Image (cartoon, rainbow, N blue to C red; front, side, top):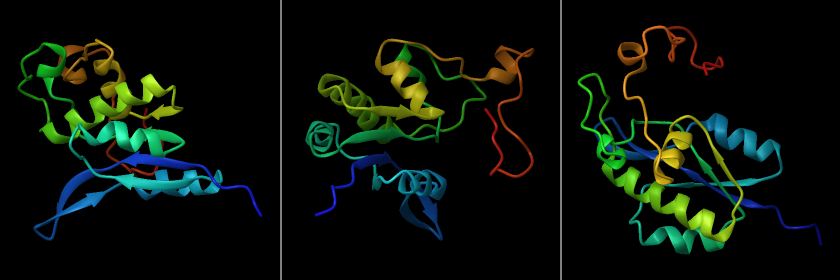
Length: 150
């Protein structure tokens, strides 16, 4: 019998597509995990109470990119340029970070994922790099999204 493949929970967002809320994750994440011999499982924002149960059933966690993290989670008021946040996603992913740490679960955090992990452990964020740190490198690109950005 072949060894079982590890299963990794991949955080997803809710996005309106043709006016219907859909669970979405960028295929680049799931393709990369599959190439590495990992079974990716997309997980929508759930109740924070579900975080512990999920973390007990997977072999790893991938915190993906996406919306801004609500400023209130790190003691700030929203900057006028801040993008809309996803309160349900924030609450669930903050709970996931704590549950994963408590279990010692391997976790990879990318972009927003790194921000949510930072905030979960008491860190803060710069809400609008362009206006608050004008000398910083550009965060986004106008060309093909498939290219590396940051």
